[in-house]
Length: 65
Image (tube, rainbow, N blue to C red):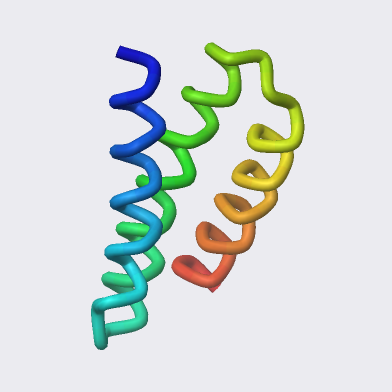
């Protein structure tokens, strides 16, 4: 099940770059980041949690700023 979570996160982040609308890209990417953070927490992979936490912060800022 953990691998499924990782692949889902990967698919969401990669898929976000296929969108033309910047708001949609940020939303889908942010959801992917949340999934990656969950994956990183489960696997105790700090670099994944840190990177996607930073990206989630950037995406959130860009969505609401």
